[in-house]
Structure formats: structure tokens, C-alpha cells
Amino acid sequence: MTTGATRAEVCVTACAEAWRGDGEILAAAMGTCSVLGARLARLTFEPGLLTTDGGALLTAEAIPLGAEAGTIEGGLPFRDHLWLVAAGRRHVMMGAGQIDPYGNTNISAIGDWARPKSQLLGARGAPGNTRCNPTSYWIPRHSPRVFVERVDFVSGVGTDRGAFDLRRVVTDLGVFDFSGPGGTMRLVSVHPGVTVEEVMAATGFTPAVSGDVPPTRTPTEEELRLLREFLDPEARRDREVPT
Amino acid sequence: MTAPAKVLSIEEIVGSLSSGMTIGIGGWGSRRKPMALVRAICRSSLSDLTVISYGGPDVGLLCAYGKVRRVIAPFVTLDSIALEPHFRAARRSGAIAFTEYDEGMFMFGLYAAAHRLPFLPTRAGLGSDVMRVNPDLRTVRSPYDDGEELVAMPALRMDVALVHMNRADARGNARYLGPDPYLDDLFVKAATTASYVSCERLVDTADLLDDGHVQSLLISRVHVTGVTETPRGAHFTTCEPDHGRDEAFQREYVKAAGDPAEWEAFRRRYLDGDEKAYQEAVR
Image (cartoon, rainbow over all chains, first blue to last red):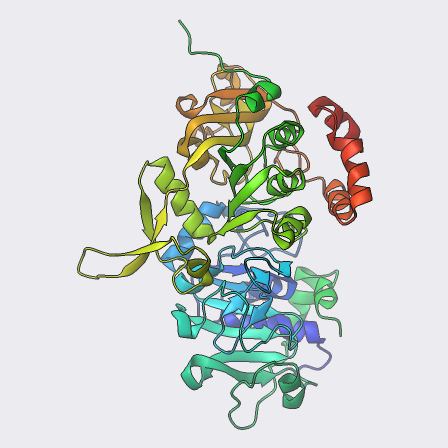
């Protein structure tokens, strides 16, 4: 086990793990640790993944955060994103303002939709994403305001509403999948230094827990080197998840 | 005999619009928005518009000026700043009606409108609250052996489309030079009354392709009513490679939106004059 990995670095490898086994599909990521995770997975154990420059270009290789695309292997305009969604050739890791035990998520509006207390983005691609291609979530700040019994608006559909394939939820505290009773969230691992009790206190519902919850794996030396020296030398990951 | 010339001024284009119209606006978020035309609508007496857009500051500004009755969109965002302040304020106050669709549904709605079809089927939206807040949405069952139930996404019908392109000729053929066409071709095909193209630079037809690929000629004059040259007309949104997003100005826009007095000052400084005055003020 590697010592000296920051919480953000553990989060990056936990995000990367979401794409393990995906092969030749688009790894679509939102949020710093998620984007880094997709690129790290491609650089290490999942070389077939397609990743972008953060815009409409498919880069020939995984590139550092914020870098120019360099050699490109294709274009990915939004209309092609939507085609990949429909064809299921994409595993997206999205954010969420609210998420419930079944993985229904809200990025539309807080409060009554007709006259919202707080208008968020709007549904974006969440309904189609969750219905048509594998979906995971990256939640950089795990709190009871985000993990709620019931979301105010279902933008992304959960396992009880016909989700195509919800894979996992990675947060700054731990990792969940949807193998709990009836397709609910189950705590898979807690990040080193985090207790199960802390996760429970930060979660507005009671996720399934089976037996002793193992720690999330820490990054390998090679992963840390790639992350620190190549993908994110400015350590923007630490700004998203402070240690 | 030559093809008809369709060069108009910004004022002529906006003068051809009328209150109550449904207007589709191209671009995506804070990217390649026909902002010069949007600004001119804000200065006009038009009102009661329905706006169809992958929404960005186009929607925000029109909301700020009270021009909008209904927004039809899958999102409204400034991209590098997630949330659009004027749109949020208009939603919170109930000043506008909102029809919210998924991005893919929205694209199918544009495809349907461009093809003059009543609807197109899609899985996007099923199970989500998009169905709840759009009680008029219907589903259809596949007539084939699979029998799958699908959303019948209605055509996003619009009277007028407004898009901004990198290059155009006087006939209304237009070219994009950036990495993404967005859905601008579908907007101009969907509009039933008129489609207008603003462009960074008006060029001779002979120079339109300029060593590029024919695929970059996204828009054909067959769909275009009028064209106008508005250098930096997408400001402050991106219009690659002619100009990127003016991030500093976008931050100033968001900050000003947070306070009525600041917004008043912002308006006076940048938006009260014509496009020429705007471009001078933001230089």
C-alpha cells in the first residue's frame, strides 16, 4: 500500500476504477477528480478508453488537465455525444445537486419546480444518459444536503425508474454501488482516514452496509507519478478536495 | 443572373421580428451565440417571445430585459460559470414559463422540426421528471415486434432561427471554423418564417471555402433569409477560432447581475447603445 496519497488522489483513483473493464468507449467526465480519473484509467489499466481535451476534440493520448489537445484522433461535437449516449457507447460520470438511495439525481432545481427556491442547470443530458448509457457519479462534497431521501426533481433516473446501468457513486468520503436491497446504494469502501460512522452522518438516508467496509485502495506509485508529474502538476485536484 | 443577395443590417433583421414569436437561437451554453442580434432584440420593443435554445447568456439577457414569455431548453449555463444569474432570477420570481427537456430529446425535437415531422421517438426522458413537468408529452409504442414504449418528442417548431457563424457569403451560405457545429443547421432548417445568420466576416462566395473542407459549409442559402456581418458578434461567448470566450467580461456580467444598481450601471455602460458602441465599450 502506498503512503502519502492525499484524499484527492484517492478520489481520483476511485473515479478511475469506475471505468475499469469498459474497453473502447467514451469516458465522459465532469469535475476535476472525475476528469483526472478517466485520463488516469486510460494511461494505466484501460487503454482503449476515448477521452477528450475537455471540449469537442478526442485526443490521441490522455493529456494533462487544461493542456492543448495536441494530436487528435477525432472530433466529438455535442451531437455525437448524444449519439454515443443513445448507442450506449459512453460511460459518463456526472455530478449531482441531490441524490437519493436509488440513485435518482437532481441537477434541475431545488424546491418546487414550478417556482424553484434555487434554479440549477436544468436536466441537461441526465435523463438520456441514465436511461441509455452506463452512469456513475462524482460528488466532491458528501453531505446530507446532497444525499437525501427524496430528490426535488428527477433529472437522472435511478434504479427504481428504469436506469440503464448505474455503476457507482464516488465521493470525498467513500465509494458506493447499487447492490443494496432493491437496487439501493451500498457502501463499498471508505477512503483511508474516514470511518463508516462519518459516512453515515454525512448521508441523509441509511445506505446498505454489508460486513466490514474495506478501505478504498490507495494509488500505486506509478499512478501517483502520472497524476503529480504529468496529469495535474498544479494539483488542481487538491482544490476540489482539500486535504 | 446571380443568386439573390441577402445582406441586411442588424436593425433590419430585428425589425422583421414581431412580439409573440417563437425564436430559436443557435450555439450551445456560452458558445457561438448570435449575441449581436440578441442585444438588438433587447434594445427593441419586442416582447412576449418564446425562446428555444441550448441556453446561455442569450436566454439570460433576454430574461433580464423582460423579453421572454417562455424558455424551452434543456439547460441554461455559462459553461465556465455553471449557472446563469438572470435566468435563475426569472425562474425564482416566476417571471417566465419554462419547458424543460433532456438535451437528446431537444435534439430530436429539432430533427423533427427540421424534417417537418410531428415528433420523433427517443428513450431519453423516460422515468424522469421531465415527463412530470411536461404533462403534454406523450409516449408511443413501437409498431414492430419489440413493442418498446418511447417518448414521442414533439417537433420544436419555431418561427425564426438566429445563428452566428464564422464566415458567410452575401447569399447566406455559411461556414463554421470551430470544432463543433452545435445544432445550428437544424435550427435554420426548422424555422418556418425566416432564418438569419450573423457572421464574423462576410466573404465572396469564391473565398468561402478558403482551403477548407466542404463539410464546414454547414448552412446553405436555401434555408437562409438574411445575413449580417457582426465582427465579434458572439461576444462574450466563444467563436473559435476567431475569438475565445471573454472570461473576464463574463465574470463582470455575472457580478453585475447580482445587484440591481450594478446591473443598471452595466447596462448603461455596455448595452444601451448600438452594436458599434458595445464593441467599443468592451474593447
